[in-house]
Length: 111
Length: 112
Image 1 (cartoon, each protein chain N blue to C red):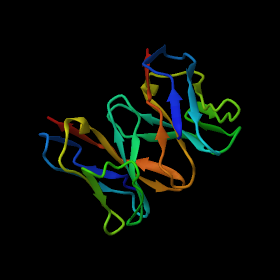
Image 2: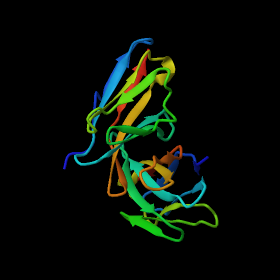
Image 3: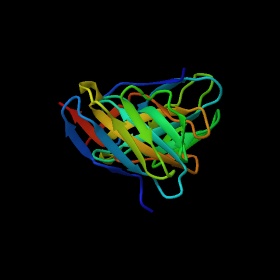
């Protein structure tokens, strides 16, 4: 069974540029999460989807961050414009059988 | 709000030593507790979990007991191996499909 797939694995951009991350969850998993992991820290939840509905986006900085999961499968997380402080690893996870399965993450570097 | 505190690393041990990584939590109600592990170059993997007080989670020789009276979920292993070198995260969930609240992680280094 394929795991959670994320792309790209690495992204380097200049500040003020837009960036997007893509996630494909494990097949059949209705719940999808985006987490932010700063260097030396644990992951922090940004948003949770149940199918195509965002049911918890209280920690998503909505002035520059947006997310979508239009068909309830793949999801995209976008930052526009990116700031230096957004340099981090962005993790996607999906839930099955009371367990969250994590993807490898996208490491973003903002110069 | 919910929070998880775990001992800071790095923790350096010799092979076959006894391991304890402390984890305490603050949460309302009765959260589920987890230990995740991140091996070098890999994603987070669930190591073990416990969903109610006095439950013991175990996997790959690691154990942790859900202690409600001390709000703790310490990770232990009797004899560590070089292959156990990784970053370990303690986490909690209020239940259901809620997101996880993680500690900062503990970097474990096992020397041969």
